[in-house]
Image (cartoon, rainbow, N blue to C red; front, side):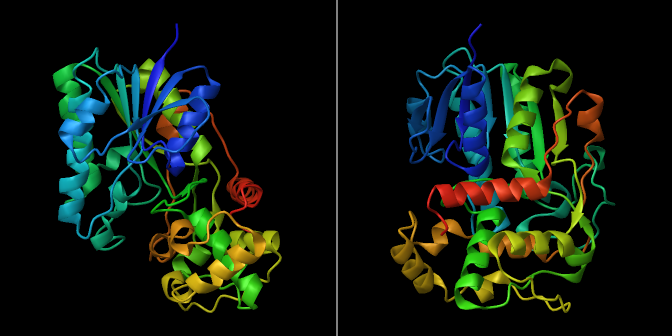
Length: 353
């Protein structure tokens, strides 16, 4: 029987990977965004989730079996993050009540569930790593918790099942995304190659030397679909990462080799990309004009602030996936391959030279 999905944030890193997988699997897919982009096989739905009436109107004729919430809106404080992002989830689920309603809702959050919000990121008393789902919430306000609570309340009211998915840093393709390490590093390496500047690791000694993991957008999309279609995974929260672990002192050299630059020796000094790339907008525009690139605005490609937050953590961060493995999810994606695949797509799409 044909299944219908609504992907919320369809033009983002996670949303675009999820829509592509669902279309490939034969689903009828509606993609919601404030400004939908053209995506093969996807029916666009334009809506501002902060406007409850407009959201309800946009969803009037959409009756999905499954809803995948892959978006959020960054605000200036965690209090505002909570207010805005909780309202977006609430308005979405309220807007879907007019039809048959979804059978399953999957919410994508992340490891800030364990690390805390941006205002207190990686500070204070944190759970032991590897992070495990049963470690629960920190005693601090967090918009991820507010989003979860909106899903839980609506599920109790409307009778659908749910799943929560907590990826580590996501590797994938999207333009204009607020959290995009893969493309940020690709742009940074390109600028270093262009100018002869050293390709310098921007983060902490703990991240350089410690173990870490990441999440490929395709791996996350497969996990979302698996949880939706697996009864034993309903009403559960899951970590989701690629399945390998690495140290940045190894990965940094791998990325440098791909771009044909030399990885600078790490001296233990934190050199944030937000500072290193602060004045590179004009240079990137010159490169884009010279090489016929599709996006001349550096700020639409790179998100150095978020990459700095991840690479500047003072602790080792690894994530346990035993819960998913026990229930039958076997997906695996080597992280260096995920980076290289992204870089190849960026070059094919004329986003980097």
